[in-house]
Image 1 (spheres, rainbow, N blue to C red):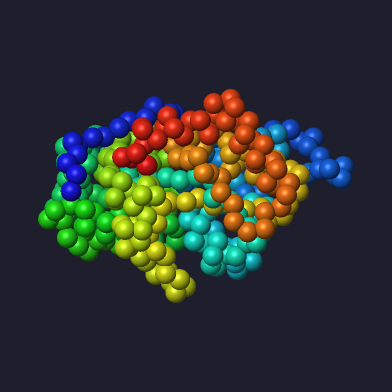
Image 2: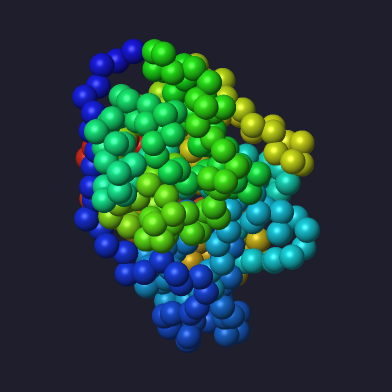
Length: 337
């Protein structure tokens, strides 16, 4: 095991707010190529994208946008069962585009990392801070920390929490069976309200995505690459060893965290929003990870979608935007994301 000094980080990105789930913004005069007035573009998305979409994407587009966010497994189920029919759907695990959803194409556009966010003003949070990145699990095992997490049957963060604990049991000496020793049913909260439990005083710490902690300016413990599901170098030898079976019977294998999106109803307005959604600088600003190879496409991508996003990627690269920012952010994120 690599020797690492205990570290925590604090980011100073203040989000303008986290509660906006639906609404419109921008120019209402957008028209499609056939001259028809565009309707509001509806996005159904993973809960961890909610704040970034509401406060990063929405101000960056000149098309009215409506945002609804849930755990990704719930998002997939709502569409599969006909409860929702959004223009754009974005999930926190590309595996959900294999089943139950099977779009003809999709884009993998960003990544993330599992971290342990904590409240430094509580006794349990103090214990986590003292334990650091090498011993964070010890106060959890000892029952000294009130923990929050999400439901693995409802969203990928829930089963990725289990993956991280399984991998931590392999990575750390003397830390067997962390899933059984740490996780309890009463720790489960909806993804969209998980970190608000800090303000309510219900929990000392939460297994969260890095972006969730960054955009809310919460303290968090960095987990090693072998544990945090962020580094492609560990995808086969480490991450794939963990798995979880959803109630549907689908078994999810551990892998690098990959967010994916597709347009269900293609229009000029939807393509315009999708372009910014999958290539915009707002993603990095909100704590997501951008890589040189992203966005990456799969399936029969409509030509106008590929043309729009390719143009944005090339433009950002020339301006030193997301494509160039990857190299500078990777050194900052290699242990973290």
